Length: 505
Image: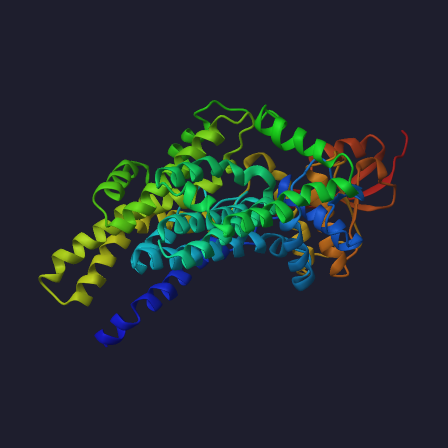
């Protein structure tokens, strides 16, 4: 039995890892209603793309999308899953969740191969999925850009790291091309956002004295050409069929979003540092300085190298994103794989020390198992906190009242309430916000053959049964009609009312 466990140790580690990461990534993924802003906007973009079959230019309510200028890779993914599963919260969020799963698997195997330790890869992934800043709305738990961005930007940077570290020319060329391939996919996901990692990557290549080595390789130029044609080329191709697109990119992404504050999303240069310390990485912050020290000074050579790489790339990225004019808490999402690698170096060091001490007193296998149990006990509280967070996930406080009301659409889709006989009153007519959420639900219910009528209060007529979600709507309707409240439904914070002709006294 011991021989079997030793022989298939990495296989058992990987299976255990898949079980552990399932819950932070996938548990109750479709529990929350569609979120306002990015998630529901991408949902509307996907609805339009599925209708007009234009896979290059994104549309928003039938018009070319010029406010959200990102390339369409994430929207392609949403369209694909919507065709496979039907349009729903799950189909919109699965691309983000699957991207997180793929990243976890990639980190496990890539780190295992480079460091010759499946345990280090295992611990890296476990730290990552217990980071509050990574397992959260706007990143891997909702249908937005950032999980896919983190996947491609991390794989791209790790491949550049491997290209630097491998002396074998064949391996170096393979990883060099993979760097450009995944960099291209990162650009097609969220545009220039991934390029904030570039200065840190260049600095590491410079420190390892590999700049001239790469410049002499034909594969470097082949990869660069691939990036220019398919990554940068998308922008010029879209400009050719969507004039004004490049100007919109400059206004919304480069000179605008980075150079100045947009939509009051401001913060000091310490904004992301404070976010990391106070909640995004709080489970590991006290250990983090020691993690850097151990990873750089007391680790094996390969662990030392990948720790140094993560410190440089992560540190430079944090500096660059911190000086941006527009700040949102999820803009630092690409940082967390590097923080996870650095932190895992400490846990791996503890594992090796405990295992070495126990090996003198028992068998190697028993020592390994006991050492792993000791280290995992240190990760138990962060893991419990993450599971508690995703078990009944919540959105931002400012949208929760509206979100709870939207559970009526979820229940209608599952046959728990019939909406055919009612008008639902939402005064949502702004360009973004609630209107995009309602559009997503209309599409979701339409695909299920459910007719839902969503109207403003001024479109209600006498003789109708309506459901209102705000007491103020009853006041507005009472000015024009006689109101008979039939039932109050706490779950949706809603009232079912009969609207009657107002009888003048």
